[in-house]
Image (cartoon, rainbow, N blue to C red):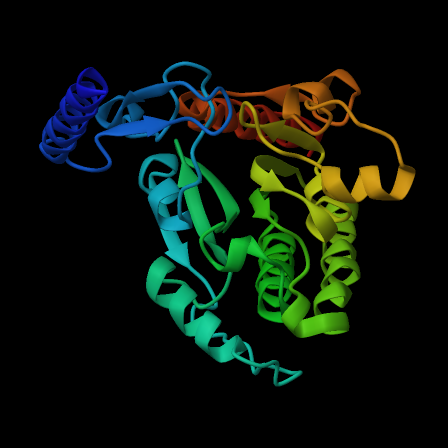
Length: 285
């Protein structure tokens, strides 16, 4: 009994010592990747915020992405704000918080940009704005982006990141799928290029509409791409689904994505595609 008490006391001392040692390590120094589950030193994320083990691109705000993506950018429609059409409880508080976190008026940043002298209309959805959900203003801004691109005869590049249609706006949100799709069609009929870049996550009504309507569909590595979530699928079909069912790599295998591009290579890849299209248009014009 005495030996048990001594060991117990010794164990408590070790626990206290470990706690004191742990307090010396600042929080956030080590990061666990949500995809490969490997831990790494926070500075290894680098400027592109990418896991050094599996190349998964961590979720970043639209303005963070803009810093390394373009050579120039002129924002559009930054004064548009939702009127909260359904007067949904606590919705205004969520919107206010999201605006502070992202510096955006809604879940997409739009504007005219240049990448290595190639002009384009650019949209970047922001996962930090209520999970990149699509509301009426999201739809209006993306529609205006396509309409302006059609008038000015420039390609559109749209980075998607969304949990789907925003429930706080109900049917008004769902209507944006058809609204944007019509603008995409008019842009396409004008013979103009539309490139989508899928980022984590791209799901719901965004996947069911404009995210999959690009002439060229690119994706970052390890992105979640799908319509309904895994749990919903299993509850509906009463069948287990593979853990990688909605990974971009699996979606690529089934022909829904044209290429998976590492985040550090996206700017170069877009510049090449835009220049290629521009030369083709000049030759045909």
